[in-house]
Amino acid sequence: MRRTTPITLALTALAVLSCGLAGCKSGIENDPILRLSSQEALDQGKEQMAREKYYRARRYFSHAFEVEPNSRSGREGLLLLADSYYLAGNDANWIQAEAKYRDFLNRFPTSDQAAYAQYQIASSLAKRVGKPNRDQTATLKALQAFQELKRLYPTSDHAVEADARVDELRDRLGDAEFVVGDFYLRYRYPAAAVTRFEALLERFPDYGETDKVLFHLGLAYHRSVQPQHAGRAAEVFARLEKEHPESPWVAKIPAEARESRAPEPAQPVDTVAADGDEAAAGGEGTSER
Image 1 (cartoon, rainbow, N blue to C red):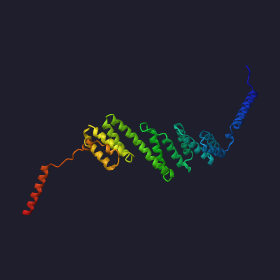
Image 2 (image 1 turned 90 degrees about the horizontal axis):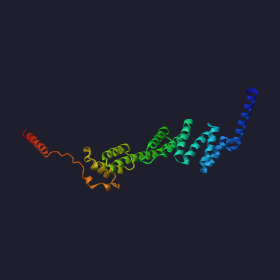
Image 3 (image 1 turned 90 degrees about the vertical axis):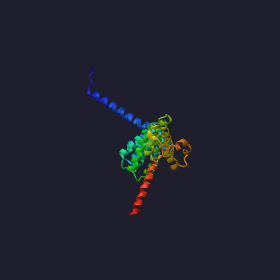
Image 4 (image 1 turned 45 degrees about the vertical axis):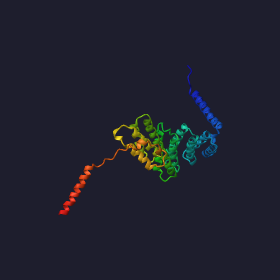
């Protein structure tokens, strides 16, 4: 058996090291981006971004950050890297964008761009919001992210923008609640529909289509056979007419539902007469005294 001498081991190690160095040198020569400074890579990445070449821009921004992660150009590179994913669109890129914005916030929580990063986290989530008849997890997370922005950076310009986004997302959650209620109503479960529509009005009083909800709630009450729902349809329809007189839903109110209001309890006639007799008797007694 041949023995491995120390000299052989040394020569082998030297050969491996030489190959490694040659490979690194070859890599740098073959990839000109690796020869750039952080600022140079940042500038060239911006040029690619301006041309909407987001995939190409990412390589420059990644290099700008990796070379000098704590420099101004490095920080900007990481933020623009997140932007390149966000602007590219589609769910996969928005997921990557959210992760990069969170990475930026974790590394640089006191940056003057922190509010922007938080806004973009919320926007990346909002981009993934599904239709009202789909799961609304992303909607809830986006809503929470915008509310977190308002809490952490109340004086930021982005906090003002967040107000409108919060309203949009709350309306989307209201839409999802309405879809469920409408499903119950169409498939003849009016009592379940009442529960959904009432919950919608309670949770989202500023919902953008309250008139539509009131109309369908009135229908649900009208079709329900639950004793506690008797007479409620007319009350709801009356509210619809009062609060939304110009709504197209008013014209769709069933005529029979308008007249289904439960009668208010009236005071018995004999009680009224008795009260009058007592009052008269009391007056006569006083005059006699």
